[in-house]
Image 1 (cartoon, rainbow, N blue to C red):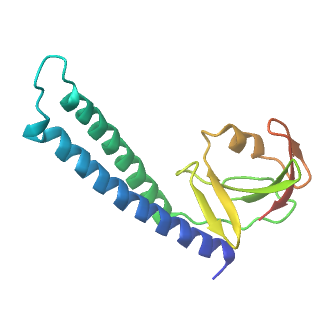
Image 2: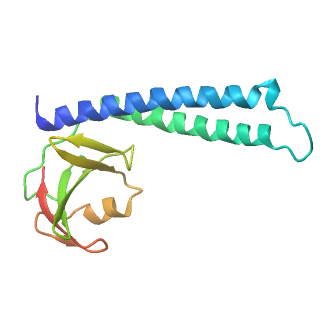
Image 3: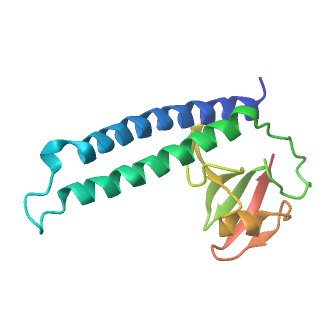
Length: 154
């Protein structure tokens, strides 16, 4: 199994566990929102309203997590040569102030951090400014804000 395939398996496992946790939290929030004991005792009691907002937010997170699981279930990550321009699926090492940082450009689950071979890899999506700054760059190119130098592409 290639290193990227193993990384993809870890991401899938992480996202599935996250979906399970979020689903349970959403069920708990829904139960709290519909519990008869949460009924307002006065016009100033907003417990049930707050619980319903929480349940709605949790449901949105579950939908987003389920979408990410679906996307990653069929996602493949192409291999890049060191001098290829960075594109979706690239695993990029950026030297930020003398410290290596690792990013994987993917279509979903932005901001998720995965441990892989002793390094933390952050998933970036097209919504991320850094994703857009890395796109099309090559090994040795620099990016600014944050200041960084691209030191590896795979």
